[in-house]
Length: 283
Length: 317
Image (cartoon, rainbow over all chains, first blue to last red; front, top):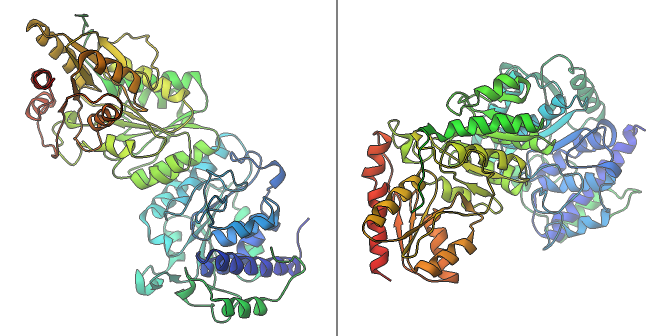
């Protein structure tokens, strides 16, 4: 059953609390981008994807599949997977610890349910997603493949190789997303690499492009609806989600400084207060 | 000495092409991808028989590796084909993350390997690919010696569950192994039994080692010849058994010293049975344009150089 906007908001708030507590416990990790893409992943896993943790297998047969190409955003990924029922929420406490299934970047070597492929070295996940989408077509599996990239990540040439491949092979069961927050480790994307107008670039590449507010649940739902309507068109879809790095906590929002740094204990307390407790409860 | 007959020169890449077609006929999950080198990789027959299972990727090797990994996750058995340099050095990180660390059942078909690529010169002649692929945890590294063995190795790679690096070449070379001998991954093949010196060879150097053994026999030296078609996992048992018998070893490969079969053999012997080892390889150099045979001679990889190395190894006993 689809979640209401209020329910999604509540889950997303809890996911942001999880993200902050995970990186603080691990004293490392990437909270900024995670908090920016929380609303997208929450909508994806709780309302959009045809997925079922109880019957999940790595081959993704009969279900939608998701690839986190920007692999450093594990805090949001693991939190959403746990909250969606793939593994116990309590396991989030093991993030980045020795022996954990919750590796710093996604791994398939620890048998963590929900993870289809390793990622972390940037620019590669969209290619893997193309392969998944092609495999589904070969098997006449009508489900979708989703892939989340970063805008900084899109400086990698391989993203554009995959972009050409998906159009040439008519992968209209592929819905790619870009977390378009305009920030990367070293600063604003346009100051680091001059990436320019991503919408115009993806359009020129031949993709159906949707630009949406990545923090507005109605806009996110609408974007997915439009993307899914592209099935049968022979054209893959790229949703460029306008997001804010560190969204939800005032001192973290809108700056690249929280890409890969962790709040101090008093900052964590402040941040958790700003996010407010939810009925879902902390791990 | 056991006689090997060259049944007619053929290129090992054509052995791959036939093996791929047979693997595709045996298993509908086998798919093939190339980065604009369908003809060079001899994938035409597979593409003609299974057009829906042949995927042209254009000149974009990095994406090809990732797409193959994705296909493998859905249950396909993808063979990705390009020149050795472009499916190793160019995409090392992609293979590392998507295939090796990602545990995907991808087969890397690596043609035009080594110096015998010939006239195109050093940009295309990788002598470092074995080192790169050996370095990856869990990667199986195969370097069959002729057309027949490459065909059989391709079939074996398709049946094996896990990442495989399958290395072969461009030039026409003697075809001398049995057409119907199944390839066993991880098993060395003793081509000739001898007692004075062991010649370990892989790929194109196996024929050269056999020629060297004949020349040595004429001089009263009995050489054991081992075809190390599987470089990783190395058949250390067969290697040590032979070294214990002969007490001197030569390793010949169409690859540089660093990270090659020679170092793998030396490391195994250092641990299990220290013995003098001589190396026949490209040392620490780049290639250059030339005919394959001229290059094999110029870089010291042919039969006379192997025979010379054998004598040096013998002298160190």
